[in-house]
Image (cartoon, rainbow, N blue to C red; front, top):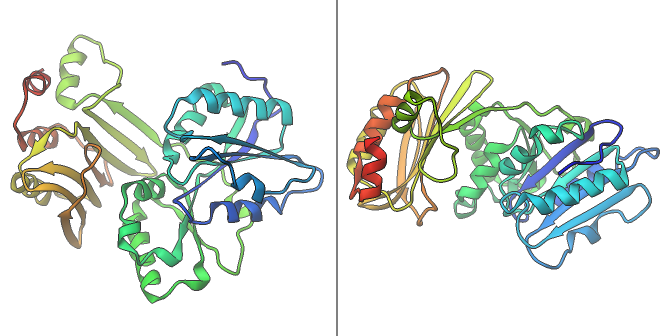
Length: 343
């Protein structure tokens, strides 16, 4: 799609956060800081078919608000989002743009779309903001959801809302959370009676180097042929590198089952890592592993959408040996999987 380019790239902010975290409240406050001589635009995404949040935003001159209803612009087809964003930029010619995805969205996927080359002349991405409800940090059932973790990981700036009503348990949970995500070198801002200023979030987005490829075992075969297939389905391996840290991860089909004790031994044997997080379908049921150097935690989990693992380290590594050991923990290979792993 060819966009009608504005005269300059528009500073663009993604304001993400889980359901009820306070995204719209933060957005309202940020919009109140608009200079009189500027036009600001907002693209909102609600999961349902009836938009409510748009009615909470300023309806006066100088603001342009557009909603995308039904579904998640992070995960669904990019076409509706591209059309809406293209029209908003070309018709409103805003000086600044805010995008608020649904609380059920994956902001990292939206950020990946908006940092593609064809958008770079039109939008200048700012640091991705995720809003966290500080008054609910003590609620493990809420804070341990995979989507919640995905939103935290994607953020460069984390705004802790309702900070003025956090209790002791919430504050303790916040310190644990900061330590858990310290490898990502994020900025944490507290928002209670004191409000967030535009200057605090008006920071250029720092691109994360991401490399997604087939499993390392499969790559060897294709590298010999000087061909690498496009990644369209599981399984695959990926590496993200930023500010001296590397995150290596694997996503594997949900149907693959693993021997729990072999898997646990493998994870406990790893050396010189900062974090290990994983969810696996094992012969003992679905298990979540949450390791830091001081504590190895694992527990039963609800059924996942796939098997996945991420390991954060401070340096580059050859991950082939680990992947070979990981695949050896697998049980009940079907013929398709055997063929894949024999390549």
